[in-house]
Image (cartoon, rainbow, N blue to C red; front, side):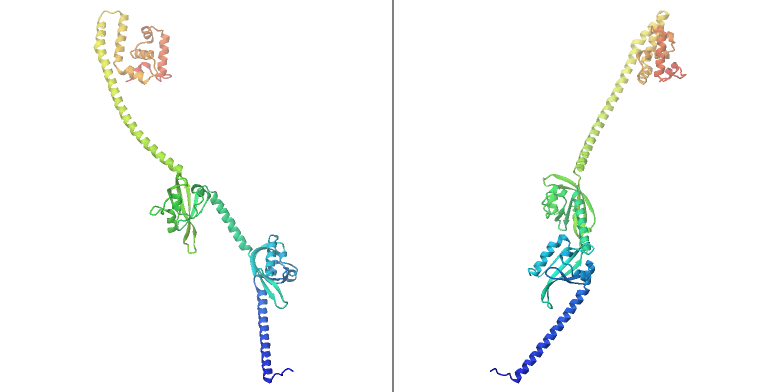
Length: 435
């Protein structure tokens, strides 16, 4: 027979039951308040929130979710996660939901494409967690969706812009490289790799481009100058390619990246190959020196020629003076003797002609005539001398044993060559006026 509890024991049990009841009421109040807070958060959250079962069917959605997808609550409860997912992301969505309910993972988050009621597609940042439905006693998935379509567009636009910029920089035929503040090469285009090699990223620019062990300080390093003052700097410099060949670059350095405070963190250097230009300039300088030497040589030769010409003129003058002296001393005395002898009229005419021609020889007339009008024939010069002496066409024809027609022909040629044709200038007057 069981022992009856005492009064004190019964009183102790009653107090214990009262405490349990109080704890239960407190728990219910806490749960009620927690559920109320959950409902408030669920219904008023700016993000789209939905509850789904293990098969992916929606149990409940909030107003933000309805606005995001275009379905009301009743329509949403007829949908599944797969039904609002873009075909490209259905497989991964199904796999992650299955892993969650198997408890292979506690939660998951990824970016996926969703499909609205109107068929349009948008990008969402989805976070899913497994929670317990205490009221019904089973597990459900809580999903939160944030529309990131605009962010995706911005990112894609940025990537596209970066892709275009990179394609443009890669297509430029000039050498382009980017250095950090420690002069490490952090980016190059294909032209730079072609000239200096494909393994230059991470190396010092002065090691790659100049094969130096130290920076170009105190030499003019335009990259360091750009880091210090943030300005654009240019200069011409000599570099050495991966095969040891010397080249000349015209370089422009400019700040490419800055930190939040505006301090330069990377400098881009664009370098144009001016080797051919430099070689042409050097060749031009050498050619100039050669021409200068040639000029000095020509000046010396010219001076020598002037001396020779002076000597030639002096020699010619000496010869002319000698001829004049010989004619006067050796010929004219005998002409005078003949003039004083008994000669018939015809012989006297010939003698006068000889005397006149000898005088012309020792005077500058015929020399001037033949040098000034170098296209005159010897016969024309002879006839010009007789015309100057006042001989008529008939007299000239008799003296030269020629016809008057022939003499007129030569006289006409003389007028033509002397520029007197179609003028009224007298031929003898013109010849007498010559110096």
